[in-house]
Amino acid sequence: MSGQHQRLPLEVDPFRLAAREEHLQGAIPLKQMKRLISALTSDEGDVLIDVVFSVDLNRVVLLSGTIQTDAKLICQRCMGEMDLPVKLDFQIAFARSEAEMERLPEGYEVTLIEDTPMMLSDIIEDEILLALPPVPKHLDEKCSPEAEGWKRQQTIETNTESVKQDNPFDILASLKTDK
Image 1 (cartoon, helix red, strand yellow):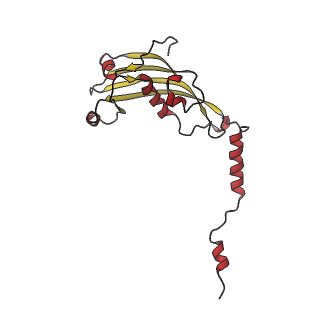
Image 2: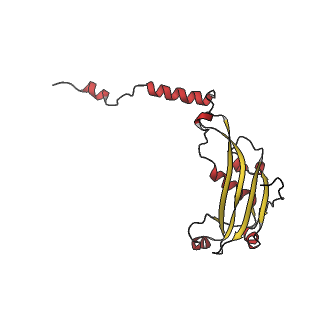
Image 3: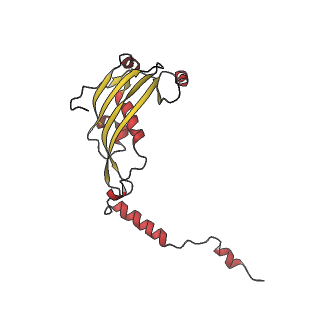
C-alpha cells in the first residue's frame, strides 16, 4: 500500500459502487471500530484497506481486497500484551434479500443488505473480528515467563500433577465386610 491514501467515504452503497467498479484505497482509524477495539488493548493506529467493488460473471455484487492492521491483544497464556499483525485477503458477495441469497451459486461469503448505504468501517470491522483468534496466545518462546498469569498457570499445572486423585469407590471398600 502506498503512503498516500484517498479519503474514504463513511457510507457506501455496494450496488452503486460495483456498477462503477469503484476502487477504494485508504485508512480507517481503529477508533471508529467500537466492537473491534473492545477486543484490543489499544485503539491507536489505522486499518489500511485496498478494496474493489465489482460485479462478477454470475452478476453477483462483490467487494474484494486487502485489509492490514496491527492488533494489540492480551495473551491468554501470560496475560501480557502481544502484537498481532493482521493482513487479510477477502471477498464478500452482497444480496438484497434472502431469496437472492438462495439463488447465488455455492462458494460465496454472502452479506444480506437490508439498508443502503452502509458503513464501510462496519464491513471491514466484521472481517477483522472474524480473523482474530478466539484465544490469543504468544508463541511459546515469546511468552514472558515473568508475567503473573504464566506463573499462576505453571503453579496450577504443577499442583494438579502432584495431587493424588481420590477414587470415588474407595468408600465402598470400607463398607464391604468379609463373610
